[in-house]
Length: 232
Image (tube, rainbow, N blue to C red; front, side, top):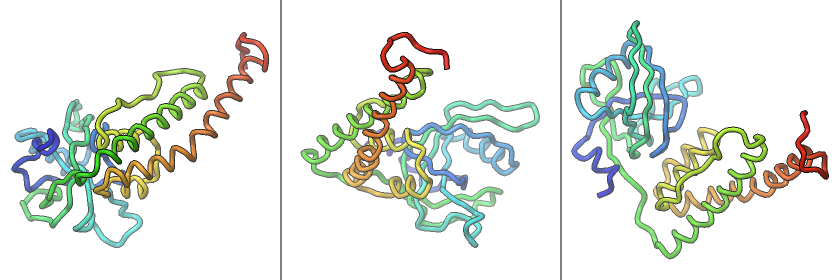
C-alpha cells in the first residue's frame, strides 16, 4: 500500500468542499475559508486527520446543486492554518489521493459528506512506463527553461522532481495552467501511461515554440549582437 493510501486507510466518509477547480495528488492549494459551514468543517477535521475532499463543481453551468455521484475528486490534507480574529481562516492544503464519490450520507452536518472509494492508477508495464516518464520529464525541463528565459530569469526556475511515473504525471499536470475540464480528464484516468501520453502531446506542441521565443527574446535583450543587456 502506498503512503497516500495509508493516510486514508479505514476512512470511508469525508467532508466535501465543492470548488470550481481540480485538485491533483501532490498539488498545493491555498484556500481562504469564510463560510460558516466550512469554518465548522475545519474545526471538525482538526479533531481527526485534517482531511477533506475537494470535488470539481461549476454550479453556474449546471442545474444540479452538488457534484454528481460517480464523479472523481481528491482528498486534501491541511498542512498550515491561520485563523483570523473574525473566525475566517487562511489554510494551505495538499492533494493526497483520488476518490470516487459513491454517494452522499446525511451526517447532520452543515456541509456535504461523501461516501468515498479511494484509488490510484492501475499497475502497468514498467518497460513502457519508465521511458515515457523520462521523455515527459525531459520535455518539461525544456519548457521550464524556456519559460524561465522568457521571464527574464526572474524568480525561481520552475522545476519538478524526477519521481516515480504516477507522481511525476500529476506534478507536471499541476505545473500547467490547464483548463479545468482537461485537468479533470487527467485526474480521472487510471492509466499513468495514458496521462503521460497526453502530457507528452501537450509538451511537444509547446516546447519548440517556447524555445524559439526564448531565443528571440535573448537576442532582443542583447540588441542582436552584444552580450550587454539593454534597458527596455
